[in-house]
Amino acid sequence: MKNICYLFAAIILLASCEKKLEQLPISASPADAFYSSQNDFLQATNATYNSLRGYPDRQLNLSETRSDNLYAVSDGGVRDWEGINSFHKTIAANPYVTEAWNVNFNGIFRANILLDQLKKNGTVIPDASLRTRLEAEAKFLRAFFYFDLVRWFGKVPVIDHPVSPEEALQIPRAAVGDVYNLIMADLQFAGTNLPEVYPAADKGRATRYAAKTLLALVYMTRSGISYGIEGPGLGVNEWDKAAQLLEEVISSNKYSFLPKYTDIFSFTNENNAEVVFDVQYITGANPVLGSTFAWVLVPDTWFQSQGKATQGGLTIRPVSNDLLNSYEVGDTRKAFSIQSGYTYNGVTETRSFFKKYVDLTKVPSNRVDWPINFIVYRFTDVLFMKAECILHGAPGTQSFVDSVVNQVRGRASLSATATNVTLAQLMGERRREFAAEGSRWHDLVRSGLIETIIPAWISAEDVQHTMQPFQKDYIIYPVPQSELDTKPGLYLQNKGY
Image (cartoon, rainbow, N blue to C red; front, side):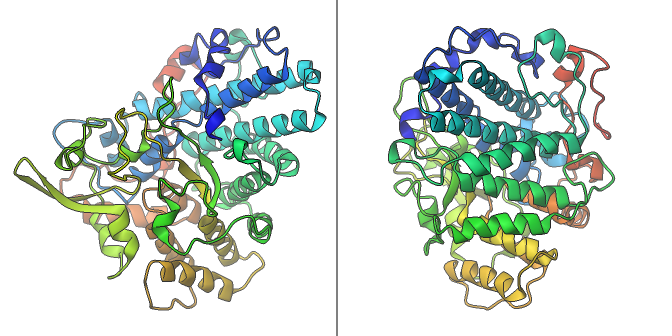
């Protein structure tokens, strides 16, 4: 998909519709005159994909940093991640929180215009199958953005068509179940109508199996406990639905388990057999189409110690001792994912940090133009997710669960065989396998383990005594203050903030 890599040119065509994005969610549709050819629709689809560009950074800032994988207290001044890590109540104006709301609704806005124009002007596309595919792509992306929102914020406004700014200011937050209804309907359509594969030129677009994987995760997330809050878990029992979809992905034989862990993330092995869906980037384009997530969790002084240019101007977000100590001796994933200390200008840093996405031979000249893709869903995750469903009572066997865990452990050069793996053990194995991939917070919430693991971790890890006590209300984030200020009273703040 390098040739359609979230083209900024395609965004420009929608700029006139996006002049007050600080008041999101707002949609308007003055674009009828633009959609006059097949190429216009393709550009608009690419513009919708473009809203994925910051998704990886968001997972690292809001999921990884919030979780027990990082003890991300500030070092050398207050940083934006401090309140995220330490469960501060006053983070409604935090830029990471605001970005999560605004950019996801920006993507929804683009998807809604595209879907509306396909209804109005789609006949300019001669190939009916292409029209259906573009509709399916737009619905996949709209579901993707809404799922990201519901996991961060719980209730959000449901907007499934273009509306005027005045109309948007009348739309309240919808119940979580209603948000899920739109997500599931969109993904069911996408799972039926997206292609199984694309030609090389379109590599990276959402496939049928990407939609099925996402829908399975939606069912699993809905099935998580509710904690008595209006968050992503509804306590429904849909593990069997999820397991069925995951089995379809597995049995499609379109993906496979790579024998070497490092090959999954290699700059020279992108779009490998593990990748079910990823966010695609390309370096050297004008305008810039690269990524930034590779250095989000990496301190600048480490790059400088390696003779490389400053990247994000960031200080260290240390990997937690709890995670470091959870790796068994000989686990090859630890050394690949984590840098254990370094020296710069005669100063030795003893703390560890994630470097999973850094290849020092591939550092670009422009720090916002890294060429590495971000894998959102990979085949190992599909296997783990099915194992999780089985442990929650979906059809399947304990031997399947154990075989998945042992296959993963074997790839990590661990010889000890796991038997009768429990849910807690499976989550521990997931933690090490997917460290720095942005899944840990979501895994803890979905599994129901968060209320025991996070308080115990804070008690043991918080040696600087900067973290606030964990409350179940902190499972979701606050509604951004800018949204509350746009029309006072339209949205109520989430409890606990």
